[in-house]
Image 1 (tube, rainbow, N blue to C red):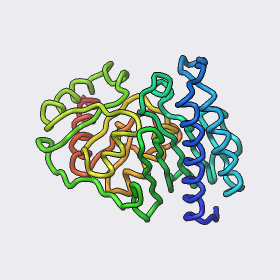
Image 2: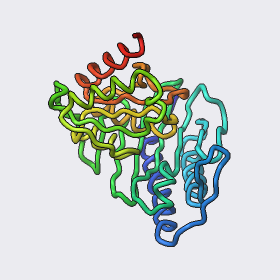
Image 3: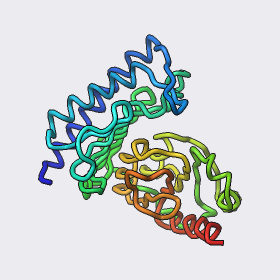
Length: 261
């Protein structure tokens, strides 16, 4: 489908900034918390931020559908599709911890083509567009050149399901063989990966809305972003293995070996 990619990216950045204004407003005054059927929290900040994002994106690219965390799918899934999580990390938000962000990505025929990741309280915005690189606060960023696990810094996020099978042992071996292990979580470890601050991110319990924009950012920074089986991100993605090329390849081989065994 025909569209102006630079115009779409500008709209996504504008929408993320608008969401950030709403989130900062509620961050300072506090909000009541409701609980959704899946036992995850939601607030008025989530809902108002998504409403603002939808309004701006619809005006900028009316031919695109929108799939959002709070209001679901509007339009078809198979053409141009915005993927929106207005406040990824609501649990952190309600506990007054700054590890939450607004995630906006555009998918074209099943391929992720641009993404904006904005953390308004933490104070970072990163964006990327297919073929145009990844940008952190106006400067182009690249992943690190790390080549061996002994030099690598790993970060893990949601890994509950990983503990239930043989890959847990593979993860333990990766940790033993690496330089250091961290658990930055949420947007933060992907931002660090994209700008050379660490080398591998592992998560096993995610939603595509959480990571779609981050997938574009990591890829455009020179990294590799797949699920734990090595598959490209899609609407069905529920896990992440993202890293600098050499470390991603080594980690994927180990995880695949354990699964195959």
